[in-house]
Image 1: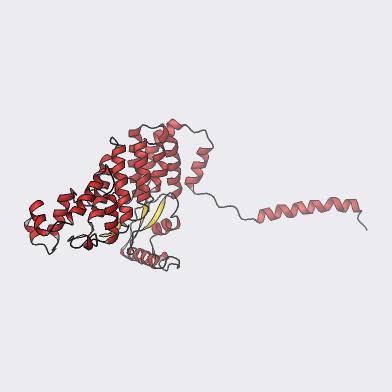
Image 2: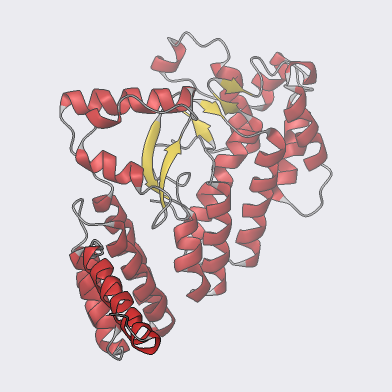
Length: 355
């Protein structure tokens, strides 16, 4: 029996439809989003009540800990962008302080001794061979594995501070992009510039990592900042930064000194001497005045220095093994340098604000 052609044509689409349905049934279901994403998506489908959102954001920030995801951070950061323009200057500063603690809590990793050894080995290998696949990954704590997989998200970095020292940190760009655009001009300029300066390490232990030209440029910037924004809420931090960069410029650090003896200009590192000589030519600058006095100091004999720059050494200093301690104290007194401790007073070299 033959089937009429028109009946055959009507049956063929039916079988095609059945096969299509069967194929759909064989496909694997899409994985469900994590709970945080699902909950937030349902909230986003509803109209946003900004007053309620901004009222609750502090609790959201305080609830961030080392078990949360980068998605949670990113959502809070998006909410901050909505709330900061509506907040007073004091409220913005309060949120900024909370955000510092939020990231500190998020990036805290509790490791067993073997896990700590594995992380140090991972960091060392990464510093030595950044393009080679690491062999220690599976030995790391689960939190380390998570953070390493998600670095680059929510402003999380694995920061190379040199000499094989790697640590998690919040990128300095975070405050520059999330907070600075909505803050008063003085605070905005401070945060944006400090963020740029601290993207790379300024020093590692007792060794400077930036050249004298960059040191002089930064010192001049902070001097000008203080002149332009005398009432900035970050004035004390800017004064500290000017103080530290002046020390770096005229004295250096223990493992990268400007000079070993300061006997004359031929004992000064040439790159430092060039910058100090150029700086001394600038008008109406206290930093330039210091540079001029530095050049004059190099022309003084040891006897002249003793007479013109009387300094007292403590008993501990007198027993020190350093032969140049007297000269360094004379230089500091002559230039008006304050010998601040860069690690204990405040940290102005790892983020976009001093911590």
